[in-house]
Length: 505
View 1 (cartoon, rainbow, N blue to C red):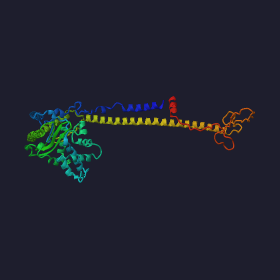
View 2 (cartoon, rainbow, N blue to C red):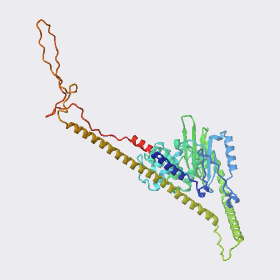
View 3 (tube, rainbow, N blue to C red):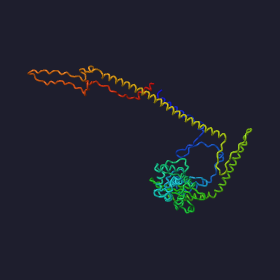
View 4 (tube, one colour):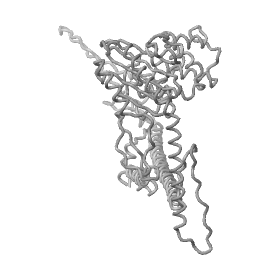
């Protein structure tokens, strides 16, 4: 068996062990898969639980009513529905409503909100000193220029400051994903900084829920555009609004105009309005802000009563669950000498609900964990064993190769020594034996005596042969032999011969 066959067998062993059938612990786990396009793939139905049987909790938002309000508004303004994207969040309950939520728009200067949230968070964490200057200005002035005046030059400086020479703008946009809860992003988000109504609304939700995490951002947005966009109507001037607009006309002639902000009613609401090629966009944005302001004020009036109703329903549901659990435990037969287990704790209103597990479920979970641990050890052992087998095969090949090469070099050395001895013995023969014979290289040519010329006979130019002169300087003592001297040659090792011998074996 040659070395190539051993290599193939070793790698096949590793592959077979790594592709061994998974344990039941892994087979029992199901991981949801998200489609690349952003739409959720079909997932297996969730198992029935007491919460699922009780049905979802009532929502304070009337989604159908909001949809009807927006559709009527767009029809009156003669605006195509696909040119507008809207996001709304009532922060008291955290409920959201969207129109074209996953349509991606070029945001214009709206991108400066998550950009400055990143910088503000680094300042709070101490990663950026408060006395740091950007473009020769202190940080407070930089925040004023960018969020209030929407200055593009200093926004570009902040982008370079956050990137710190590590790449392009996709770096800070990747970091800004933490402020939203999207399952997937359009590729234009990283490449060209496109935003969707859902993304921008959730970014402002993060800012509204924890403003201390982003010092300086909300304060500056409250000063932006005091008489425009969401503040265009006099009805909106009586409340605080932290807003940021975005406007851009691209090379293809598309006109992008948007506004997003936090409107501080009794229970603040978040509104995002994004438009593309909509005429009179600022009045459209301002009137939509009034529409959602009126709807939110109606929610504020009913919120307290709705919350009390929900708490009462929650208490009734928990009591019913507790009663059903006690009845189930009472119906189970008790073994002689066994003591009844205390009832499991039940969550109260306002406390987070925990999932209660039965002993059977506990044993199944422990079995799954044990199976995962065993399978992990088996895979690790298989991989280590395969690597060890390959190392052993390689070491055996190296030793055989070294042995063969030593034997080959020794044979070549002995052959060279034999040739050298033969040449030395030939050079030590007597001079008579080494005298060159006529006709051989180095022999002397005998000169004949000149013949007398008879009178009256024309003389001819008779060319006498000249003795040949041996080439080279003769050695002292004895004439130099013209016989070729043997030269010692260093043999070269041919790897192909060894490979052929290995295959023959």
